[in-house]
Image (cartoon, helix red, strand yellow):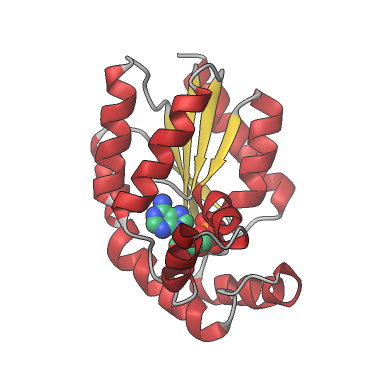
Amino acid sequence: MLNIVIFGPPGSGKGTQSARIAKKYDLRHLSTGDILREEMDKKTSLGKKVSEYIDKGLLVPDDIVLKMLYDYAAGHMDSPGFIFDGFPRTIVQAEALDKLLNKRGIPINIVLSVEVEEQELFKRIMGRGEDSGRSDDSEEIARQRLDVYKEQSMPLIDYYKQQGKIVTIDGMKPVDEVFDRICQAIEAVKAV
Ligand code: ADP
């Protein structure tokens, strides 16, 4: 089993790279952002609650996200592996994921940290906002999401560094080059 976490600020290209990684290595792509947006589109009471956070650029509370993870995992444990995209985003979530996987003796093999300069992130998010239709792709909300990333998600870099799992990827490069570099990093851990 191959389990990958891809980590990076909003606009770093995690979603695009995750889809390609999932296809190449036959992994299940678990994007908490996509799952949450699906719930919002269904306009369920949970979906409405979720949109209150997302539309403000805040993180959805850990208990909601973790319940979703457990439900999803329960239905997909037969997968050859996962790429976790946009999850974990807090230390609480990372600890919960470690616990869930440890119980089954499944390791996270690698954590890809995609780095992109702030100015470029804004440019990408603003560009995407025009056709993504995402309620959180406006300048003000993007700024908020970036602040949240720095405060709540960046501590995960140290968390996974301590586990010796972080590989830094230069996300400023063209999509194909970023993907090549990611594949090299994955091949290196697969060979171990
Ligand atoms: P991006 O990485 O560009 O911000 P995502 O689709 O990964 O896009 O996430 C969009 C929004 O969904 C986040 O700003 C946050 O509100 C919510 N979200 C996604 N994943 C999580 C998570 N693991 N924990 C809490 N909130 C999440």
